[in-house]
Image (cartoon, rainbow, N blue to C red):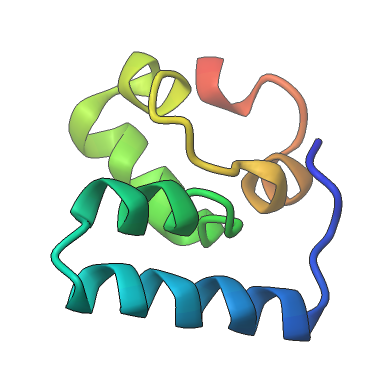
Length: 76
């Protein structure tokens, strides 16, 4: 599980990702956004649409989904 970010840390990551986007650096934008926890309902939707393996390989921060859905949720 990744360390919980403070609101200020999340805001800084969002600000930096917007700057990267404005500069046309979409790889950096995505790298930064993947540092933020993905909302559980969005992760579940991705699992249903693309499959568990896609979610596993996504490099998304799944900490909130893991907390909400419990151990092994990707395999259920």
